[in-house]
Length: 407
Image (tube, rainbow, N blue to C red; front, side):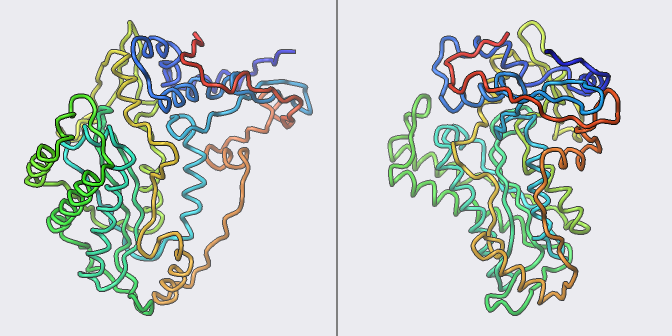
C-alpha cells in the first residue's frame, strides 16, 4: 500500500532547495566518471550523496495511529561531505561543547597556507593536513608559553575551500583568551582585546610549516605525480620551498566574542560545513551549474558563478577528506586526554560556580523538534495522532558501483 501524500508533504517540498548537490550527481555523475579514473574515495562520496534519503538506502513506512495516514521515511547517508546530513550532527556536537566553555573571551584565529603549496597539498592530503594542524597548534602553544606563561586551550577546524569551491587550505581556531599555568593553580588572562601579534604568529607558523614539510619530503612521505613531478628532485624541491618561505603567510585574529553563547553560535558556522550548501545552488541547466558566492575582495558582495557541470563536480570533490581523517581537533588544556581535569581546574581558579547542565542523549525526533520546532511524529494529516513505524524497508544495495545511474 502506497502512502497518501498529505498537506505537510507539499509544504516540505516547498522548503526544499530547487536544486541539490544530489540532483547534480544523479543527473551527471555517470558523465563525470566517463573517460577518467575517479578515486574510490570520490566514488564513495558520490554514491552516498546520490542515495541519501531515497529508497536506495532503505528506511521505514509510518502510519498514523489515529487516522491511518501513511508515509515513507528514507534513511540519510550520514556522509560528512553530504550537504543534507550535517544539521543534526552539528547540533549534537555543539551541545557537547557547552560543558567546555569558560567565562572568558575567545578569539577566532585563522592560519592559511600560500596557494603555491596547493598542488602538493592536493596530492598529499593526509600528510599536509596533518602538518597544517601541527604547525598551527605548535605555534599557538609556543605563544601561550612565551607570551602568557602557561598552556593555552583551543580547537582547530580544517577547511579546504574558498567561496568558489577552489582549493584554499586553512584552519579556523577558537582560542580561549588566557592560559592555564603549568602548575594548574593560576589562570593567566590575555590583555583585553589582544591575544598575540598576528605578524609574529605568521612568521613562526611559516617557519614551523616549512620545516615540517621539508622533513616529510626527506623522509619520503610526499608524492609528486603529474605536473609537479619535477619537485621529486631534492634540489628542485628545496629551491621551491625557498621561494615559499619568502612569501607573507596569512594569519588572521578576530576580536574576542561577547560571551559563551556567541562563541557557540559562531563556531557552529564552521564546524560541520561542507564545500557548498544546497541553498547556494541557483540553477542547473544545459550542462551548467549556477551558484552564489560572496566576493571577499568586494565587501562580501553576493554574486553568482556558472560552471560547466564536470568542473562543478571536480571542484566539489577536491574537498573530500582522507578516510578517517579528523578535521576538528582540540589542543592545549583542551586536548582530549586531560580535557575534563583541566577544565575543572580552570573553573575552580576563575571562580566559575555555575552548574553545567548534563548532556542527555536525544533521538532523531527530539533533535528535529529542538532544531526546527516541528514535531515530526505528529500526523501531518489529522494533526492529532502519532506516526508509528509499521514496516522496515531494506536498503537496495550496499555495494559501490563504478557508475550509479538513478536518472
